[in-house]
Amino acid sequence: MRRKELRGRLTVFGIILIVPFIVITAVLIYQLNQVAGLYDQIVQNITRANTYNTVFKEDMDAVMYQMVARSLTKDEVEEELGMKSPDELIENATATFSELWEKTPSDAAKQRLTSILKLLDTLSARADEINSTVKTSGHYDENMMRLDTDIRIITELIQERISEYIYYESVSMETMRTEIDQRRKGIIRVAIVAVLGTFLAVVLLVVQITKLFESIRIEQQNSRNLELRLLQAQINPHFLYNTLDNIVWLSEDERKEDVASIVTSLSRFFRTTLSGGRDFISLRQELSHVEAYLEIQQFRYRDILSYRIDVPEDLKNLLIIKLALQPVVENALYHGIKNKRGMGEIQIRAEEKDEKDLLLIVEDDGIGMDAESLEHLRGIIAGEIRPAEDNSGFGMSNVAERLRLNYGEKAAIFVDSEYGRGTKVQILIPKMEETE
Image 1: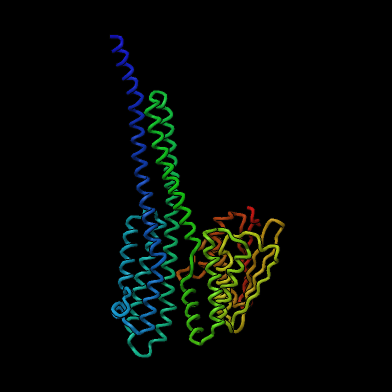
Image 2: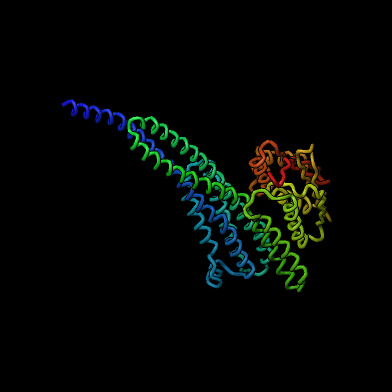
């Protein structure tokens, strides 16, 4: 009798210990599965958006170029060349981003999707305008201009908004990861308390949960690293198209040496852009990347562009975040030199500052900026003002944001400009040796 009573009490005692543990753990696991489900949805959203980030602009620009160059309508370009029509590309993209809008929890990411959908509507209207005149005599030059000033700019803006959407979804993913971590710790604490009475059962359960969370942590970390690399490895397709056009023209003129030179520069340009997935490269490699870019652009702007790179040899082995200079140089070319009448020069310099910092300088003698435009650009660099819809300031904003992410308050960008005299951009970052 006493043995039965003792067994009964032990059973009740065990139930008192186990049941609360099971209930609490079940509730925590249920909540965790909900968070993990949202996490998986964000991963799927990023994957779908990233597919369009890599192919939509390329496909849209290519089909519109064929329409204008060959004087083909939307239907004809599909029938004769086997390419998807602009309408099909836009409709598919609209359907995808409308669906993502319904599934995206982040307000900031939703705003980017709303902007993408509006840009797709505008893109459809501009494609219709070209389609309506593509067969009409005398509209070739006008349509080519529309292709450059409308279609390619809009698709570039769409690509930028997609990248911004991916960024904000990545931020949401990091928040989810933190919440998953917190709940994992809660489960472990509950398990530790319950292990006093139900050691064997709890140990088995804790092992399974630990494996599950370790798997989620590794998956999240890999995904986050991939997204950050993709955000830093953006390539401007418009620049690539112009370069390929230059190669075609040089080939038609049988300028073999120039073709070899521009192809070599293009290879150097992309080699540094990719950099084996590394975020930091030597200043020597960054300067090689910028020089390759300028060599390519000189084929197009030979009559207005000259450049000079003056960097001490002992500084070239320092490490810097990659793609820190090229967007600034591009900004100097397109917003400074191009708007000036006659020849202009871009100077690139570097110097040591206070033995612990590196100062990079990009200076041009282009058209410069008035006081209002200068203050606006400074606001964009500080992150207080968003770049305009026409994409002006985006390159500088991108550089500033990546400097903040990688260096924090140790980095700074200073811009000085005077209308009619030129612009000077200074980038201050901590010195970083190869061993670091």
